Image (cartoon, rainbow, N blue to C red; front, side, top):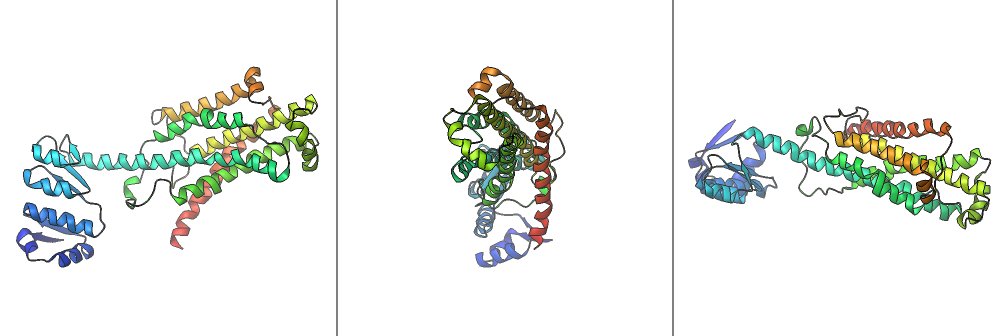
Length: 343
């Protein structure tokens, strides 16, 4: 460790100072004049570093103002320091700064989890309409069913993700780059081309299997499409369409439960369930999601409105396969991430 006092710093040029800061990590600057503190802040920022400065006196004000984050002492700090700072530390305890950073990182992480969860369901919602155009088959979902997912079943679980406590090991990760967007390319790829794509395959597969079980292959379903679209088909076929649509809807909802658990952990496995006291809103969200899904299918008036019908109980075990598939696939992806970084 090298100690540089104010007198020695005065003899170092700005170019030499930046080189020193760039190549030496263990430096202590002591007995600094106010203008030298400001000079250090400007040198670090010139290197692209994010600078935080703590201070309590009048002479700390220039450095507090110039830093990316200025932290003044709330108990022993002067009024000038508090006015110049971005944050006032009420208890003058430096450990509070670490805790604040920990929770700040958790907030940014939770926003990413929230966005991933919300965006993942967009793919299985749009695929039925793409399949309707490309394959000329009936749409597996209706517009009202899509709204039921976006504004109903997804709402509380998404809020629960936003209330997740800080993840273990979050402080051991390197800081995010200042130009990294919240809606990053990696997040979109995971939501749309990974989690969302798995959901879409499960939902469309369930829809087609219901028809297949009733003896209608893809060619037969294509012939029935105009009659089902205009509701001129026989009642038993309209009922079968509503059952198939309900299966697709439930597979999306149960897949979203798997996405919810997978998104709770960015790098570790999502199989561990949170304790009630850690995040009750997450549990409330999952229970409300499943209860609303059951109500939409089993309540005659709601089922009629949302064009769904109760399906055989034999399909229920398949609903549990959906979140398990999501979790297994995402765990595999997380396991491959270190190999991708090493490569």
